[in-house]
Length: 56
Image 1 (spheres, rainbow, N blue to C red):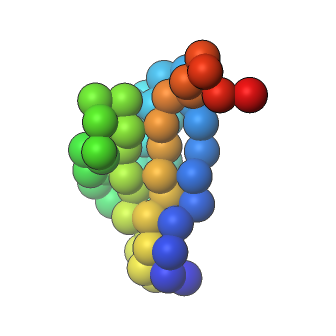
Image 2 (tube, helix red, strand yellow):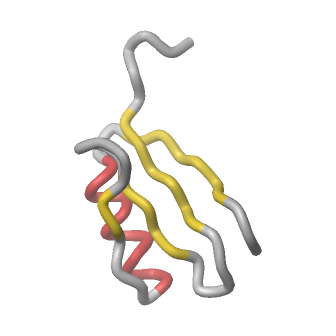
Image 3 (cartoon, one colour):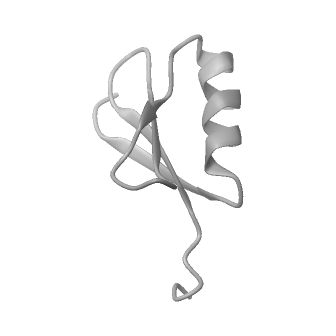
């Protein structure tokens, strides 16, 4: 897979850590303090960020 899937979470760091453990990869810091990237073993990333209160 190439590209990314995006998840929104109340605690993105905890979810990134959980997903990283499941996939046996190290989560990477993202574009902001609340953004994490978990590499997919076959390519691409799982992007995890915190919900914005401004988003619908």
